[in-house]
Image (cartoon, rainbow, N blue to C red; front, side, top):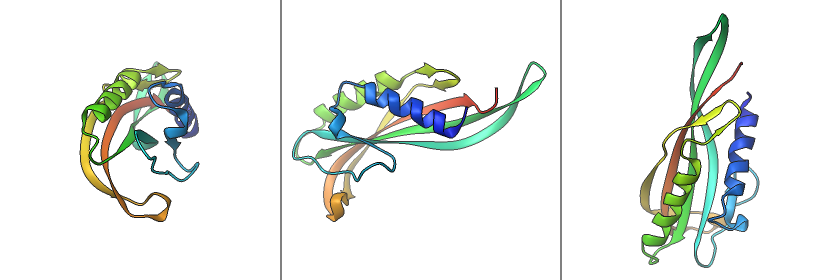
Length: 141
């Protein structure tokens, strides 16, 4: 399985998530992230971390690891209940997801809190909560 195939599987899964309008979903290198007037929006990326050679039967196989990272943004002053519900739903959506030779593990969320963003070239402060989903896949099978 190639890195591009992994990205396609992950992005297809994200697109199918119905807890966030598709116009509020952003993907790596597709369009500039824009701050929305209200509610939440999210950007997903896939980070490939390491690899190791494992043996399956008599043929070598390379097992690769990485992390799906979903940054969820909201405006300050909205409280944390709504963004926590959204990140909980994203965790549940990706937890132990399997497709082809891609296996996701248990995800977790880290609240980054207030952070400076530069959407559409303007410096702004938003609340950011990030979902991390570990994954592994067989590079050669």
